[in-house]
Image (tube, rainbow, N blue to C red):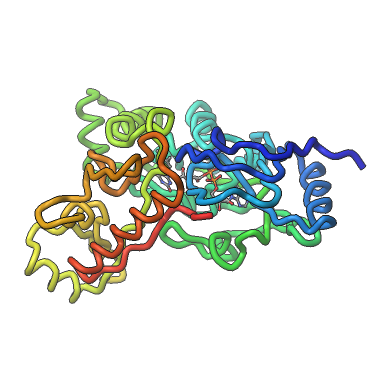
Length: 347
Ligand SMILES: Cc1cc2nc3c(=O)[nH]c(=O)nc-3n(C[C@H](O)[C@H](O)[C@H](O)COP(=O)(O)OP(=O)(O)OC[C@H]3O[C@@H](n4cnc5c(N)ncnc54)[C@H](O)[C@@H]3O)c2cc1C
């Protein structure tokens, strides 16, 4: 049996957008199902712990990985089925998500244009049911294929199997490290059903002077908004939103509103209210009258334009960022009585 090369003691600095200089005991890249099968079997034989890595844009490493880091680089984008209205596009787990978005826009396949420019790879997208600007991958998800780490058998999972929720799926919970996702198939629309309900998109389209709506125009508007708002990991280390927007009951929301008139919340179909975590973080801080927004201790900080994003200014450690996240969680709990949850995976 041939094996892809296993590199010993490899720095993961270039493989995580927080820019943590941690090391993998072993590191390998797989580009096919066969290579994945061999690699998993070998890791099982030597009882090596495993860490599955995509683009590293949703992970905070707080320590070295004393095991095998498996970079899933399985390529390929194909139309696997088609009818009058829909097209089923299958992409390998290693395809960059934004590359898939661009491919779909070029071919006129609608449904993921609002998810333009989300970093990372397609294989990780179902992990936390990626979402932005009113759309989540679950809206267009058809199925995925995944290999069982233990016995290397392939499985196909549909939306119901994945239990998608807000930045959630079974893969982030009980199936963590149980399966390696190898491909994702999306069911896209040939006739666009635009979702521009987010005020920011409508405003940006107007600024751009767009008269005839198209999926290209929507994606361009999203790209513009994101570039203006989110820090570029190539410039300053981060993993996007560090926390999830917490949900509270309508009663709790009204009680909070009495004390904080301008608190930001969206009423959900269930009647519960999703609070803007960024607002909560901005409106409390490390000391009386000081906001977390723009706060910095050493090289660990809270972004000055987007309080939801924690940043590594240069040489913060994973532990520094983690500690800051704990202080923010505690501060939001004390000030508002609301529990914040991390969105980013912590290792
Ligand atoms: C600037 C910035 C903006 C962002 N904006 C958004 C946004 O708008 N919406 C959003 O939802 N997210 C956003 N994110 C988060 C991130 O881009 C997504 O979560 C993305 O899907 C992560 O993909 P990845 O390949 O980088 O995953 P990684 O960080 O490599 O991995 C994430 C988790 O998935 C697991 N995993 C990875 N690949 C596989 C696989 N093939 N099989 C099984 N498990 C796997 C890993 O073990 C890890 O636990 C943002 C991040 C950044 C840095």
